[in-house]
Length: 423
Image (tube, rainbow, N blue to C red):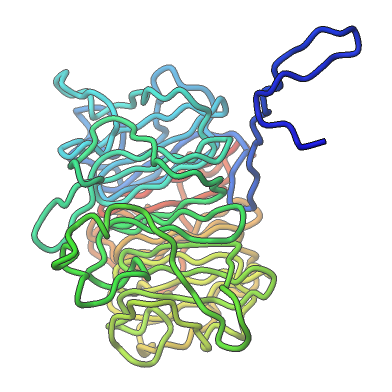
């Protein structure tokens, strides 16, 4: 007997029939956060990215954010100048700059971008990501919504070929996605089978599927080859078949991916300060295995404009790339290198989460302490000093973190956010 199609009437024991409706599958991935907490913010907030109201333009220390009407938060991400929060119920709240639709909601009411507002979505969201002017959200059944726009060196290029999207747009792909990641102006989507789709700006090679001759607005092929999400084809160095992945991360202009079952890291994108981990300082437009990462059992990767921080399975952090402002955490006399170096001043701590801004780095330990290092001028380090860069990881001390544990950190262009739970 041939297999029945979806929705085909199926005989019941009593002779009646009913339509078989396929159940939605809830996706699961190691990158999803589920522990509920509260949001702390600090740094510069002149366009509302702190979510503390119109009268507060900066905060030197972590400050509690009141999410209007929202329940407990399970995830928080920082875009260039906006912030995105996911609640325990799968709702999305945003605040900050909305000039190009990055908030995904109406902010025509004066000052409404300075405090949190709910994004209208008809699905439960389990993960979010944000870039300079775009936001994306992963649903519990593996679909992805996005809003805002991507930009390149000459300005906005749109989220789709139709232009920017000020409200959530369902990416029309018949795939089940389990993880999403954003750079400044590109978006990566990991499927449950281990393939990676990319879309957005490709000028620095960050899409991993566009030849350099077509990287500027798609060249003669047009911008559609950038904005219509397509699979990154990664061939095995030895043997046949495609390389499949179980994790993907983005820095500002780079993409990193971990090979499924093997732990090998591939990367593509900008490498002018060795931050991609490759010795040749050029942009890489196709996926490259990164031998310099081979000795590290990579758990996660975060990066800024020109540096990368790696977290291994034992909770140790490694850094490579540009040294300016102390962003590597390796001290004032460290040298630029494509080989990641252990951040030895905190090697006795076990870190569980890392996050980077353009020139800053942060990490949370298993005991809930939050460390920060790098450029101080935007108050993103939470130490109350905008004149003194930090060249090694330094614990943030504040009244909020005396009674709370940091479990996730994220940094934008000028602000930092922490997801924290009660001790």
